[in-house]
Structure formats: C-alpha cells, structure tokens
Length: 127
Image (cartoon, rainbow, N blue to C red):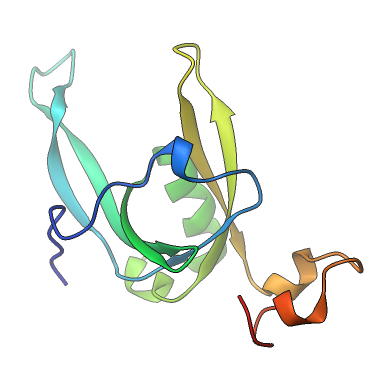
C-alpha cells in the first residue's frame, strides 16, 4: 500500500505522552528524507507508517530503534504489523525535542493496572 504523507499530518512528540497507545494502520513506505547521509551525500531514508492515536490518523516517521523493537516482536515483514498496537515512550533529545519510541504490545490489557476502569480496557467499550 502506498500512502500519501499529505493525507494526514505527521505525529510529533508533542502530540503524545508516555504510555499512549498507537495502532499501526498500514505496512508503511520508504521515502527519501530531506536529510543527507554525510558519507554518501545521498538522501537518508524515511520509514513512514500510517498510525492511529487517540482516534486520530497520523503519519509516523519511525526511527530505527522502534523498527528493530517491533521487528523483534512482530517479524521483519511489516505487512504483519497492520492493526498491531504499540506503547509510546518519549525520549528527550539533546536538542530538547521529544523522540517517539515504540514498544510492541501483544495484549493491551496486560499493560493496564487494576485501577484502570473496565470501560477503558481494550475491547470493552472505550479504547
């Protein structure tokens, strides 16, 4: 599936908080970024995925750490990532910006506490 980065806005660190859940909605695409590789002077690759967070669709430019973590959990073929959920962790960069790091979630309810109201549990009303 080819996605258009103009269809939705990009997901930024300021759009999410630690513990937020995102759902991968497509297998992603690899595009040339606006940044150049210092060694080759060629454009760096950008790995873009359509994701849903808090009921809103966004484009996530996924970093290597997140891609490796998700591949270890779900396999290297991103076709198998569609409709899988991941937890957000924000990592503060030296620039002061926040980078989005993802961890695969197999069963979202395993990550909810006993204090989480039942109507917020995955598959039971609100998500």
